[in-house]
Every structure is written in structure tokens, then in C-alpha cells.
Image 1 (spheres, rainbow, N blue to C red):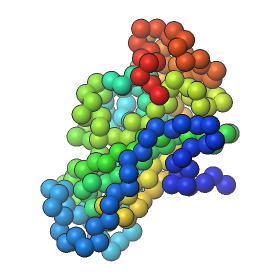
Image 2: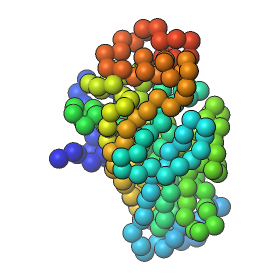
Image 3: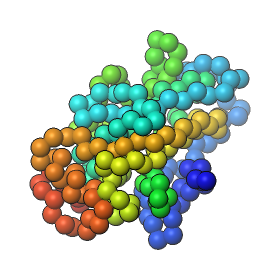
Length: 224
């Protein structure tokens, strides 16, 4: 049985996953009406409902379901990441902490990214990460609304981090400590064509050695 994400945030022995923000402070004494423009999303007494989203190479925000492809993209910070977000109901939409992680199903090694975001209210009352139907993946501010799960350089998985199934998990905790999570199987794909695809498959392959040249678009120095 796979341990829940919240119990393995420290990573495996000898592993150094990216830093995760401190837990969101509880706000038990806060009034029900949130000071955030988003407000409370749905029914405070109801169980949260969470759906996963992800960005494609063209910046399109799409639903992410079990068995779907997960785009592996070249971000401003270098390396290769997956941009993972949510669509959620029955949580506080302000200062929500999201932690996204990709896990090697064989070794249980993980790579994760956590950040605090304000969700955007939709007309149907649900809240979403991101700024709309399309995001500029070269804009650090815009991609900051998503969990930037760092996948490559691949110094953690015992398999190529592309074209093979991995476990994706996301945990959301709102500022009142209400938690929702979802775990699915996805298939990472190097989603940008040409030189970026070649560099991606070099950086993300099993046995990649840090510092190895993968082309001018690899961005290995920034991918940790």
C-alpha cells in the first residue's frame, strides 16, 4: 500500500525533495465570510470535492483523469516540470496550500512542489487555480498559480520520466485546515516539439548524469 503524500513529504533516505511551504495557519476564530475576494466556495459543512487540472504545452488548462497524459514542460526556472492545478468545491478559496507530487510506482521515490494560492471563483461557484482557460507558461507569475512539480533532471526515478505510468497526487489544505486530496495514474509526455522534446527526453531518461549536455534548451542547471 502506498503511504499518503502527507506522510512522505520528507522524501526517502538520501533524497532531497524541494522545500515545501510551512503549513497554512488555522483560522478557527475567523468569521465565516472570507476577506479574500474569492470567498468561501460552496458549503462549509460539506465534504470538499476536488478535480485535478494540468497545463498543456500551449498553456491550455485541461482536466486530468486517471490514465491521462501529463505534459512535461520547460519552465522559466529550467529543468522540466509538470504544472498541476485543481478545480474544487466546499473549501475556503483564500490562501489554500496545494502540494503536488509525482511518484515512481516501483521505488516510491517522489518529486513534489508546494505553494499557497488564492483560487479563482468560477460562475458555477467552483474554485480553480490559474488565470483562465490559457496560461503563458513562460510567465513566472502565471505559472505560480500551479504546483510546479519538478521532474527532470531525472536523478530520482529508476525509469524514464516519460512514456511510462507514474502516480500523481495532489493535496489541498485550506486556511481552516480542511483537506482534500486525489491520486491518479498518469503518463508523463515530453510535450514540446523539436529541440525541446529532444532535450526533455535526454534530461528525463533513466541514468541521466547531472551536467550532461542535452542541448541548448535543456535548462539542466535550474532543474532540481
